[in-house]
Image (cartoon, rainbow, N blue to C red; front, side):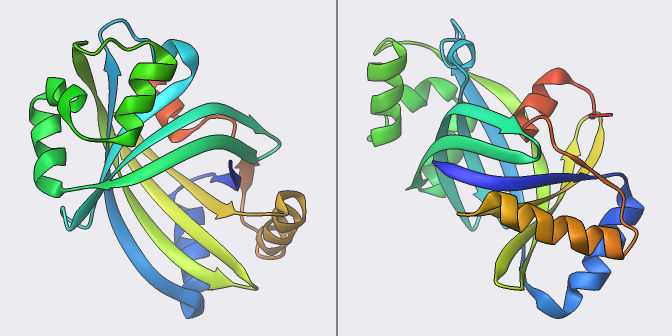
Length: 202
């Protein structure tokens, strides 16, 4: 189970201010491209599961993931997640020809077939995706991930923090924002849900 604090920043000015304030604590910046898949009967989406390929830093490496049973409330997200590396060549081939997903040697694809009823010869479809620029900071014992997410219909800004004590860590981040006049809301949708909705959150 992945548990994260997720706070949505109001606009690019807030994102830039947070980036500037946290700059002494910056560790790395990742460029991510996220591509999503489902079978032609939408068995994953209808069961609140998400199958994703993520490419890092202009295809330096790629990861296949499956997320399931998501909940988000008061800026705290909980979701079951499995990840496994996939070669960039295989991942790229699956984007170009999604039906190849059903043929790869993958524990995640095996779960997709066995637990979600996706047939062995089912035709996978590419749903499209979005790009994300993620700046990572180590601040007060927390790993903060500041995201600039570029959709086809606009750009959103969010800060995430994976946490074992999310209520405590949310208060710490909120205090930092409040002290510095940074406007924010509790995130109410995952990035995938925003992508599927076709519009930015209010």
